[in-house]
Image 1 (cartoon, rainbow, N blue to C red):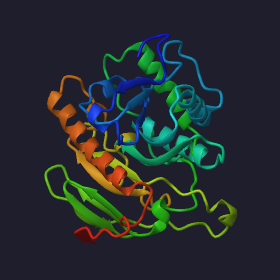
Image 2 (cartoon, rainbow, N blue to C red):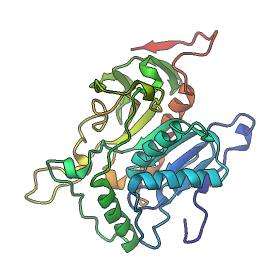
Image 3 (cartoon, rainbow, N blue to C red):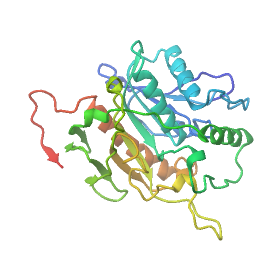
Length: 325
């Protein structure tokens, strides 16, 4: 990432042995600071990986059309780069919101050249417009942030003041049993549950709250189905300064294993994988061990999405050993 450089930029290239049958490329969207440096530190993800940075990072400009303008612009960036067909989207923090917005615009465009098979949200908590929040909406003060990064954070706060997450009328995989493989096993996860992996523990099913569609939901929009999503969830809250008792906005749902998404949106998170970190240190460059761990857990998330492949049932004629939940 550099001023005047390509956007998106290719971060990783699919290994030669996979090029005959490549995995869907992964497009990673920047966080609130506008940069993609963290994605360059990731280990091998065994596919083409692209990264999109905030094009206003260097000039400090604003997106007059807010988050939706960003999402539409980034679709254009992907088209211009020749990205087409089936892809996976993802991003850290704000990048998860933008992934959902991009997926929504692509889903409602019958002429779109890109189809989003799944999303990886890296510690992206549920968002309600800040203007509707009753509690504090501030974030912790992080020391020694470059001016350009802080400017991007400030612009994001402005956009999130009134932005709402995209509305979907159908849950991922049509609300049916979801079959996928990960870590050498096959799983069948029913509606109302997600597959959960604690930081030091084994995969297990957990029940989550269910979202109820509004009675006036429009049937003609029912074809817009949320892409299946895997959530990487940080387990540690940010330390509170002396005298403060309420968490920062980034930690409002920290103790919720779906970070507030279950019950607030049609069911789309199919698996949750814990990362031992707080939100802001997930890609801390001085923590080599953590970067390796994030890479490992991101590969698990991608394995799940690859195996779902847009289908809610096993391949015809196959009889895999399944763990039914």
